[in-house]
Image 1 (cartoon, rainbow, N blue to C red):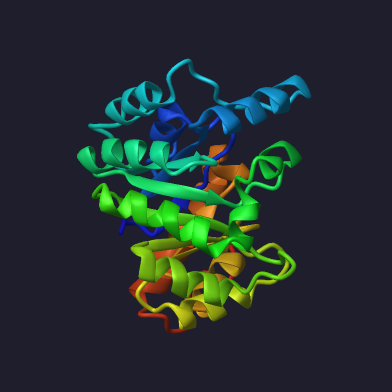
Image 2 (cartoon, rainbow, N blue to C red; image 1 turned 90 degrees about the vertical axis):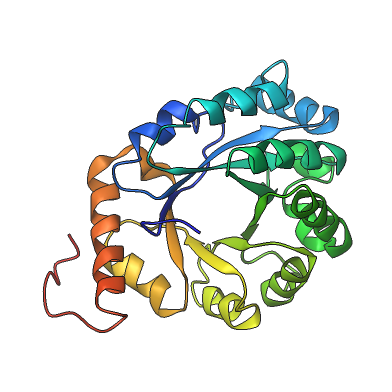
Length: 257
């Protein structure tokens, strides 16, 4: 899906084209956003801004996505766009834009902010497989490569079952925020071997990278430290070392740096 197998995870209100280009020295993909697409999620984002959260709130979300992706047309990184929508139609529209630009559309089933949850977006999609798979199918039908960002440790949610369902609906990747349950990455990878598994949460160094790759992740993503060149460099070196050694224990650089 991308090389090197390091992604930059979306940061609300911060992950734009400039941020992605700055991180392209060590990453193979960058997920812009999240972007609130429909009126319900945009109203939720406005409420979040009112309590001092940073959010993208362009006048025209679709035009904003087009501009940001076009700004990365010559960048050595594959862009993705993390989107939040309570309705399916806007997901299909933005997926078509992504398909035209070889970008990944990422369905956000991850956000746990109260305002987003109240409109049925983000984490609530994990508890409603029918709605989640409808979002995935709409994006896939538009021709885009589709990722779904999910969160572990959500009561009543079996991420292995979710992975199978979204794969059947047409998803290409699952982006797993493992929280404090790192082995869930292995459950997901085993349940849906056809999905490209991106592991996220506290990816900082050689040790954290190797833990996720041992569980069967295909790639890792860097969250908040994505603006730190030193962290990006450590993560990329660890990924290159792992895949260069075909997953075998190497004999060099055991310092984690």
